[in-house]
Image (cartoon, rainbow, N blue to C red; front, side, top):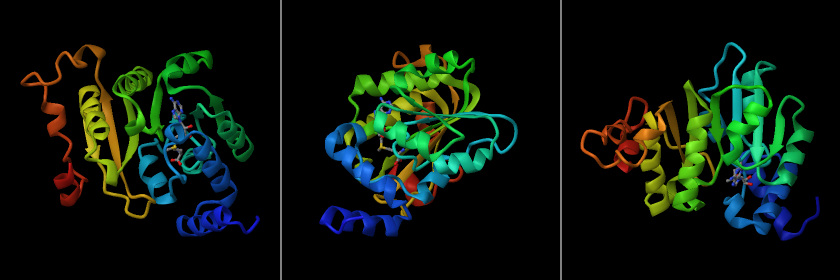
Length: 248
Ligand SMILES: C[S@@+](CC[C@H](N)C(=O)[O-])C[C@H]1O[C@@H](n2cnc3c(N)ncnc32)[C@H](O)[C@@H]1O
């Protein structure tokens, strides 16, 4: 590795976050090319990876989908949890990321595609709905229509008993796209639990654990109707800390 300022900064962050440096440089490079698509300067850290992958079943042959897999910040933990069981499909729109992922992990299937095509991609592989969908997508940088379209794709592709996890950055939680995204989650899942803040991540992040995807007809037409706001009230659930509930 050379000693120019970018590499020095990458080395510093890599050491702090425990990120393997040979994935950090490609990540920063792709961010520089497409900042709104990659939407983060550095990959997520191990503490966040542990939280977002926690619902992956520890028994059986689960179908696990990773959306916006980037350089594989969550892929390693998913592979460790699966330990050779089931299927691991990792989707990203960036072909350099999927090529890198295929080189790094023999046990996963890296696909260059948008999250919108998720159900079709599963069907092409003879797979039904996913047991777990782990998202690294930059929801807050998507426009409203895009957020809705991609969340609908998640709901369609997730088994009724499946789990969906995703994260948001703490500093952005009060911004309009982040608030809109939380409402969209509440419209689409019967249970949305806010996990503990992952302060060890750079930047600190929040994890949403979503279960029981709801049929499409509840979407939007019922949002805001008295009696249908119930899902939003369930957010401050069991394992959220008092501080997290307050921030919500
Ligand atoms: C914030 S990065 C997260 C990468 C990695 N999961 C992590 O946590 O470090 C967002 C990733 O989502 C990918 N992405 C953006 N829009 C996408 C879409 N519509 N479908 C699939 N991947 C997408 C980007 O290319 C990028 O790799």
